Image 1 (cartoon, rainbow, N blue to C red):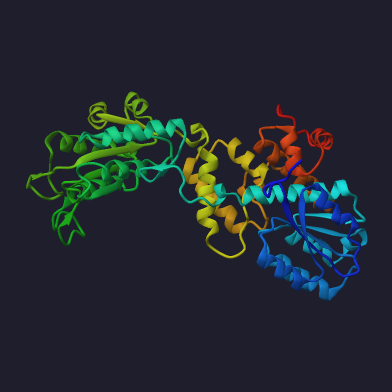
Image 2 (image 1 turned 90 degrees about the horizontal axis):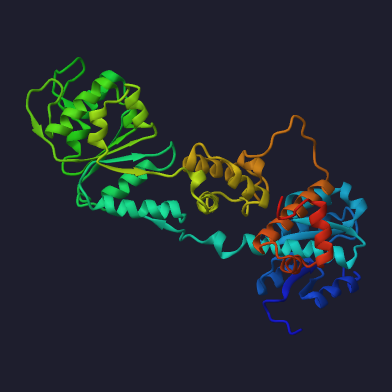
Length: 453
């Protein structure tokens, strides 16, 4: 078989001394690996300047070599883009070396090691690094329309409706759960309408007490009430010529629904404490997370006002129904928040991505954004886990993992990721992992990774 440059994976091996036996590691070259060897940290840094590595093997032959371990720590901490595997005697697992593994390494092997285990460890370390440093992770041009990210069929349909609604000048009612982006939609409609050069003024109808909402909407004259020391223009008047966005219209008290209805009918307002009728030319966009039809039937919302507001109607799909958008948005927020600070995770683990897709997201996009922000800031892991995201299954008792348990978890995570990315093509997955198909089947059975599960 003729190998291309794309078929050969580049690996860096760092030895503790020049007297190391390298016969076993030379076998990597016969398994589509381009091996570069460094006998000290300085040679390793020189090689790193010349070549790009996804995986590396650092060999510790003698325990508690303080100088070598200090240099090794410097190398590992400055090459976080490489998935390092440490080879070391079993006795060293109780020393400083174990802390280096936990903090900087992707995996470890106990010496002496056989070819199959070496190929497996380096293979999935390389494969995982290749996945998590792919252009998809780093892309900043996410699928978006009107400044709103989304590429699902549901969002494409919504974008088409926004285009049509933007060309009209009638009232619009936007319905959607909390956190779905109703204000973003309202701004998109205004910014692409004939009123775009005029202001869009927003008010949250549920954020003000009953006795203040009228003054906030309609304004007031000097002396209209105690504390009214000067005239104040209300939100409706401030939006003159533009758009008035009535957020959470379902929370507007019934007493104020009458005044709003009168304004919509007559297109004039009177400031509180005033008698002058002021003509107003604004477009109304209202939004609510409440089912207004039910509110009308329950007597909590005026039916005539409902139909005045709902000349045009948009329903925003909840995040859980936007097929394919959850992971796109998760990566968008990950890239946004991981640009801040120094030591940040490199991406999502396979289990974390699975947990993101399984969660119902009652808080929708806002919940997802806050979830990713918290995880990026607080996580101390190389890849975000379900626990970092607050989406892990909770157990009454949680013990401390041993290194063997941690490795088993990493193995399962990596194999699952490779299988998903290859569409469960066993031959391709085994090739990416650097192991035989038979061995992969054994591991799939061990970790219960059949396509059905």
